[in-house]
Length: 217
Length: 208
Image (cartoon, rainbow over all chains, first blue to last red; front, side, top):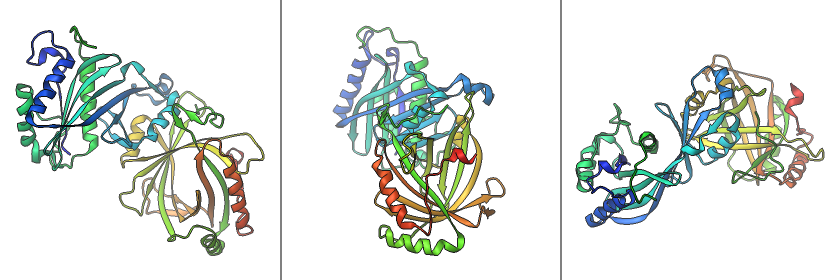
């Protein structure tokens, strides 16, 4: 699996006329994909909840409150991913969510910061493309594009191929190599690497100003 | 702070609460073979299954009186098996007629970086041990007969010594909350193991 993520969040970063909404930009991207010959294959959803160490635990541990992200990915419906920024990513089964309920006294969920991306899955030969609208509560905050190249499991082996494919429908908005690879270019790719990328994308979008564009539902 | 008792709440936050029903006993080393022989006869027909596990118990201390306990268990003889994270609640107090110890349990399979992750969450290891023994099944009942080994140098599972001259025997069932009939079936099974081993409901708090 070789996922990669791009964030085309605020409208100003996309080559569309002023006044286009997030939804319209998503439609533009998906139309381009369909013209390329990609086939729709259902929908996907990736969500992320943020937890922080409760004040009562901080004092005795003597450390600054850390943020823990608990994420789900519809591509792996029986799994739950828990991670810390620049820290380990735990892959667990969905009972982990039940455990977080038990840990209520120690880890509090910041309900308002729940963020998710939902959209359509497209299959184009060996590529799986997911274009999603990133939302926080009722407002659309950006667009996520995930591309997976199925046959390859090592990052460095197919990055140029992925880049070429991305350019075919993203044009000038194709980004550089994701930082999650760092110096591990030859490591086998895993779903946890995808989730780290989504976490970074969501954090970036959270920090951005809300886009004041008419027509965003 | 422990979560509130769950017997009265079969469902919490959209998921069914699972309970562990438990009976425990022990046999001296020299009685092991007879017990294994009896269990082979009574239990489901399957290849004799042995296990060698390393369990670490982690605590998260808050300002609450009692720390939050989590158990991380890994197999030492099955490569590639997921790690097992377990939460066990306080024993449910209640019906004195209930034959088994009942407590809320949450079992989670995880990736191998579990201990690093728990430390990142703020947990610290309290103690660890190695368990070696046999596993049997009868329907939904699980019977384990195992010996506990103390780890002499932290983190070194090769250097261990047996904790006692006996084997711990546990009969357990994990079932949704509210199914107390399970403890009757367990008691009936336990009767068939007498007099080799006496399985009882042992309240951990009374031992402290």
